Image (tube, rainbow, N blue to C red; front, side, top):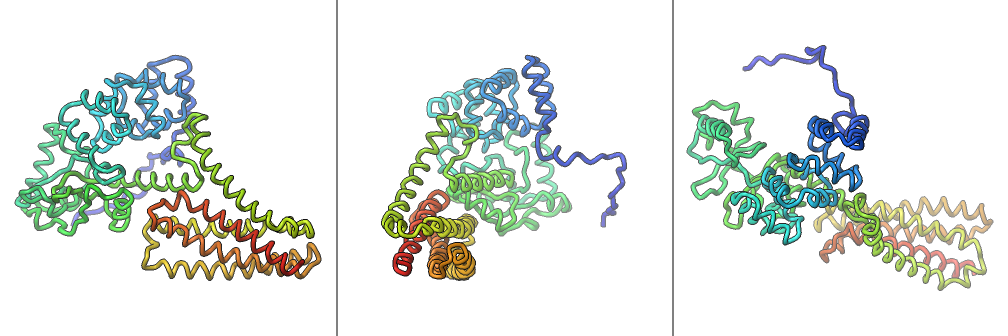
Length: 472
């Protein structure tokens, strides 16, 4: 067994970095860059950016205004780091691409990994795609053109084409020698970063995978077929990226092979791309729940107004529906002003309770934790939660209304309305996302509109209807 030494505390001169340094771009660095940029010192701009990680450079470009960003791109035009492009927000990336021009963009794309290059090319319009593809080397062009044939947001778009494959007959020693020789010869087909070697049969179908850690720990004469993992999760090229992320999470994968319809190995997906997918899907759901879209922070003012107008128009329509329900009881409200004072409480509590349930349900659907198999159990639980919360808050608001307006009957009315609306909120918060999912509508987009409309209408109708029956 190798001698493992405890190295804790063995480097007294090593100073740990500040907590913020590893997580974000330091404000001092950003200000220093802005000062150099404003002064017109192009050499200083290049020097400062050369010292930063490409992700930090992308952050800087996103924080600049359009004119400043164009100046930076102009300064870096002939030496633009390809990795910067893959880290940019889509809206900012479009502006950077416009500033780079076709020839420079083609050179940048040629230096990117195949999955990142495909993502950038896909976002170009048809004419720009053709110009860029014509300007890059034939080998890279073929891979990108083939990738464009796969469905959007699929494993085929997400995968990198560069994979390490070896036949079953090879030994550990032959595999290691092959990797070293490929690196020494500058083989472009060898990925810059990989975690598994895939074992293939003569037809280039994957039959096993071998983690690098196991490869390096095994003696050279051992056959790779004897130590490979035969149980692999093969991802068809058409697999949705959400399903890819789910598989990685469920199986604790760091990479997975992608196969075409014939079962041939065509690429691999690695954990760094899956992290991006998880972040992207999470951001998309959060944005849609709020009625805005990704990249809204970087959009022009008029574009933001247009994108939000439709959502606000829908909400205006639902608010009018709720007001029409109130209008049915205008005579009742005129006879008892206290109803107008207490009425928003019922609708507000129902909306908030429904949003809690809705958030849990939408997340559970996205994570595949809420399925047809357990749907009724979840609905039953939320019904019970709504009933118990309704009873508890009915007692509280009933006492408040009694003390406030000196009417026990009014307290009973608002208490009953509270119970009904919280029951409806609990049921709606689970059933609405499930129904939308069943009909192929994204629950994150439309659920909140239906929920708030339902809880407002039910809350107003039940409260005012009971008031008309009991109080008047």
